[in-house]
Image 1 (cartoon, one colour):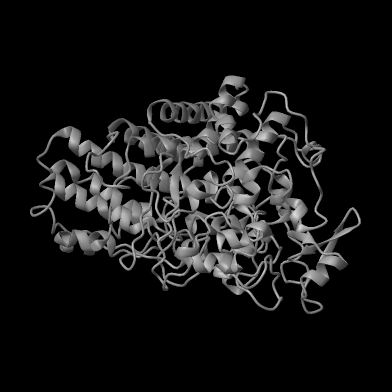
Image 2 (image 1 turned 90 degrees about the vertical axis):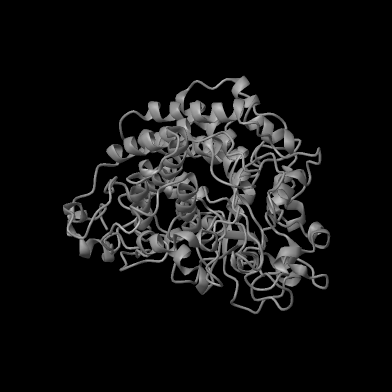
Length: 591
């Protein structure tokens, strides 16, 4: 469905009220009553009003919830593909990625109004609250009104959960404020109080949203299944945050995640995309320019050129820096064992040996040189790949040597500027299966049957051995203080959800931020590699691991070495633009 302002011009008068607000929390304008007599009469009025929520959240960097690919032109901005640049999955370095690099390496500071760390988007809350104060004016059935209330509350709860995850305590506002409202200068509310309110919003949405809006539109509107997927994600985050960072009722939140996941898994009618082709199915379902007909997609954002196309396909694949050795090494061998334990592992003497006997998802996330021509990687049939940054010829250079191919679509990348149409799923069944397994494991209630209806379905798609209840411990994770089973569940999550925006936030909720201090390494950079990939001297820095040199992407840059301050980096700082207007907001610890 095309959620664009063009389709609801009939509410032009209310647009000034609803969408004219600035992103800053305090920059509000008084509401008048221009719509009280002329609007809020029919279901169509409520529908058109709520359409504005979908249109608004297309700007991912301001409203980072219904994550897609931002349509903000040629800016390298927030979105589902980019969020892994905050983490140890990718190694970007170019100026366009500087906001991500600062967070990734721990060099971010308190800024006035940071682009990607902003306390932004509060006008969405205001718009939701205004709608909730007016939906009852409509002379329609209560059940119909409640659907739109539920839709609005889903957006509000989701938005607040994201703010809590990034900033901790925030102000809970559930009414329309005017310029003289005392709440504008109030203190932040405790995160646990806010999250209780979030859960109320999510549960109301689940109870009132239809299973199908019945319009036949795809993707259409968020429905009950989308709300369950959101609850599955949010409750897992909150439960694990409280378990590892301290807080009450961690088990309750984990149980709520399990219940939401299980209801969706059992009743939602979704299934993993699979045609029986383990070497291609995982990547194909995600790299397609549409999720139309994909039984795994719970919700996706549709892009159509030139109506609302984006430029992400070219920007991301040119500047993501490449996957890291950390990610590549985490992918299992085809016997289901980690590279530290499997006799099948062939080592990394060349990039080709890296891919031998590995989980097929490795080659569907990272470019195996043997696949370059088949995938028409970089739309370049002349040069061989990988191509290291600084090397002559070719396109889409890689800092690490590990080019990202998950989501690569040669057809989309050739489209004109702002007419790319790749439409990744915002919510998909694969994540819900992982949420279910992790929450059950954290609760200590997981069984082999639970693994078989979650993790092992993902493994079946790529013809990998099933995960059992007693896997061997990977020596690299022996000091993490968690069970070998939980190690493998977290590994599965990292691999399956690569470039889907979860890794950085997963490390934060697990209280594993110190993993971000590890260097961003690439391929082995020995004498043979230097001949194979001729790069001018001094452009490639190396670090030795067990006496073997590897590309070190950060060495020699202002962001080396990476740091993670346990006393402050789990939360982001509030920007000066917010604290200067309301000093009572305070600041997060040690910022």
